[in-house]
Amino acid sequence: MLHTPLWKRLLIWAAVVLGLVLASPNLFYARVESHNDAQSAIAKSGGTATAEQEAAVASWPAWAPSSLVNLGLDLRGGAHLLAEVQLADVYKQRMDSLWPEARDALKPAREATGGVKRAQSPDGTLRIAIANADGVQAALEALRPLASPVVSLTGAGSSNYDIVADGQDIVITLSEAEKAATDARTLQQSLEIIRRRVDAAGTREPSIQRQGADRILIEVPGVGSAEELKTMIGTTAKLSFNTVVGTTQDAEANPGPGNILAADGEREGLYFILDATPVVSGDNLVDAQPSFDQNGRPAVSFRFDTTGARKFGEYTGANIGAPFAILLDDKVISAPTIQTAITGGSGIITGSFTVEESTNLAVLLRAGALPAEMKFLEEKTVGPELGQDSIDAGRTAAVIGLVAVAIFMIASYGLFGVFANIALLINLGMIFGILSLIGGTLTLPGIAGLVLTIGTAVDANVLVYERIREELRLAKSAARAIELGYERAMSAIVDANVTAMITAIVLFYFGSGPVRGFAVTLFIGIITSVFTALYVTRLIIELWINRAQPKTLVV
Image 1 (cartoon, rainbow, N blue to C red):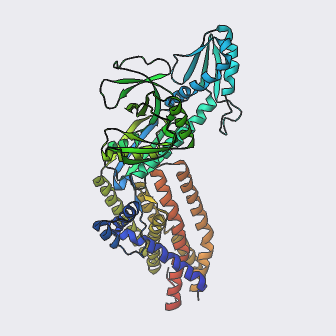
Image 2: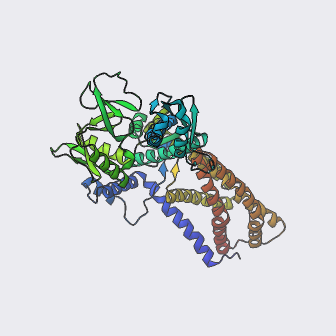
């Protein structure tokens, strides 16, 4: 008689039951999804629930698992964007912010230089004109301490700035090593900000990945259109507090080196000339919340970090009676006169906001400003109807594959083929159970991985059954033939599936988007296929052998 230790049998059946229980919520997808959405909405509102939300929560038992397999963009519908980060913008910002430091560093050498000013130069370059040609070398010596080692593994030993003399000017640019490090930081920062903005909108399972040197792939299921997604992530909400140099009504006025021209957000035809280097930027914000001003109009309250509060307090204390501009997305939304030093580190942004606009602005400010503009190279909207068509097509393919494999196994191995088909159904259930447990996303290529799993899942059973047939031809008893069949087929099964797992790992590591979805489903399918073929099928056969005790065995 075949005998598997009790502890092993219990462990195997426990794994099977757990996998099927975790997969069961997917049979009631719409109900469980509405239950989960209602729970999430109630949690965000601080525990307040509407009647509809309470009904949705009650539609699924609290004790039952509620994790679902998330549907990808191609199955649920949604928006796809490929964006190119304009890295040159960051180089320009670095040089603009470096000018005040360079000016301060040159003050001790004023006698030798005869005075300095910022000269016109391409974006990403800081050109400083030296009044006295004999003072160029002294200026170089004063500016060299501004350079510091590059903070990156690949740029070790390099300086972040290249500072060279060009005639009577000094030219400062970012070094190649610093550009590479800056590019990496900018892409990472953009990824995090986009992810925070998308998450704040309550979307499901977005896919946000870096592609190449300067591109980001964004796929968000459930969003109505690519335009909606662009609005969600493309708004920079770039806030800064700048010194007012002057005003003009000429939209084409030249603000001069180191200055910028910004339109008034409320009064048409009025433009402010501002110092390009902000006193405090949105990077120093630690919180922003929708609120109301003293007149009951919608506004946004904000709070600076310690550094921002100190800078703002020092500036307002030294410039009482002077105006300063609150600049939001290159428009002046307010230009109040400083009445007293603002040392508390907090303030309020007022303007012609609606309640919805002030709420959205607060969300964008909390998420942070994108470090550089993004140019959208590719955009695509997948409608929910097309997604449903994909689901239907995938379901049809899976059913056809399952039926074909079942017929083949029964025709080839009779009752043992039935056992293999039972294990195949358990295998599919366990795949969905694991995907639900890990919060995996099922895409159309993922369905292809499922169909492939159906076709290959019985490979291990075929190897075992053929070995059993060989042992029966050698006149082995039924129990002994089965035992030897599993033992001697083990090495071939392991070899075949290990190579397939390596392929899935490589696809996941080097692939992106749909390719990763295929790799994840394939990898999980390999594990569950081996488990069901070597352990579940054997237990089923063992139960049958020990109960039926057949005199002859036909495989």
